[in-house]
Image 1 (tube, rainbow, N blue to C red):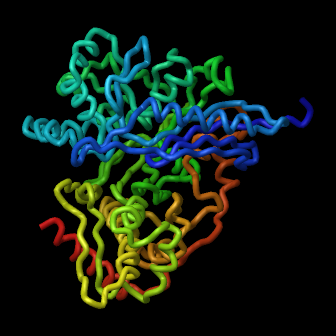
Image 2: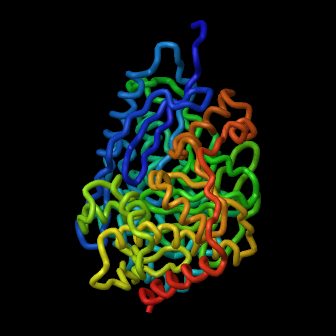
Image 3: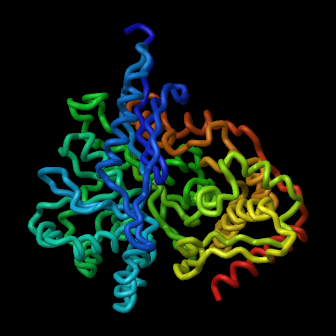
Length: 493
């Protein structure tokens, strides 16, 4: 067709929402559909999600987007990105999950992790995978299902079950059960991938009693993941990219140079730094694969904040201090400071750089003069302070981050971005399009089918909507940060 425009169908299954986007060759979102994700909490600390509902929601958004597709466009490729560490097992023949998917934040695997620690395996995880022996990652969740779902281990050992993170589940369903694959970025968050070989670490799997045969094949991030099944919208479209969501966000932010960094303020907060072509370990942080393509491997240093945007949702749903998250900006800026109030959102413990699952959320410095505005401001400031904790750890490891790009829903907040600039001492760059995750996956797939020539095209197209420069001096910055660290130490005591 004359004037036909190529597009990428980008699937983005996140922690709080399922989205599908149609991205054109000029990097614009032509069509978009979104549905929310509902977590299940069957016991205190347990967090699960129905994988069949995830697929139904994703499929519904695909249908809506392709139905809205302009008649002058053609879908040239499909890209998949998803939230990480969440894992499930399913029947290879029927596609039926044997249990809910266990979500990254769930603590139901704590006893398994403690048992591995007692066996002295902490160092093995760190040395082999760049991660930690922690409930956050997928390995312990897999073992939990094998040990707690009747018949699961026997079926796994008999070759009847498949296992994978959410990306693998999507690819399996997209291809009608013909492809059971993942990429190194997603695999590197399971605590089972050997960072050096970029293959499943069979020795570690044996130590953990995880049958390697249930794990997906590992393809390059821009590899061939099959084609969309003929019964689905977009039938026959090649699936040309799979990336974990944070790594996709780094790609979408054009963080292609060593030491370039971005921070996503989503449900969780995640700082990722391009570590170059060799894995680099820094105490307090994790090391993962950014992406692995025909052009080479990019590794990343990473620090995760368990509760970032989720903190604002808790202000709404838990404390009911606000009716809608849109109120946060006005409330936070209605007071000149928190008046000594500090909010540490350790609802599920503290992740990087503390790695303390026993910490719990706290609100300190409250007086009779404290208002909801002070509490809301303290919650937003905490999102910035926790990011600075990670930046300080990055610097202690000899990595120099000179500026920081931000994205995610909460990055709409001018106050958050300015406060982060003030307490970090860095210029904070906010792009015109804040949802970089799906765009990053779409860019990678589009490069594979020739819509973009390479990373240089992506870098050239990136534009800042606003840059926030620090507006306070070093003494004030230190004073603010010392107040924060004192509040955190009370949680760790």
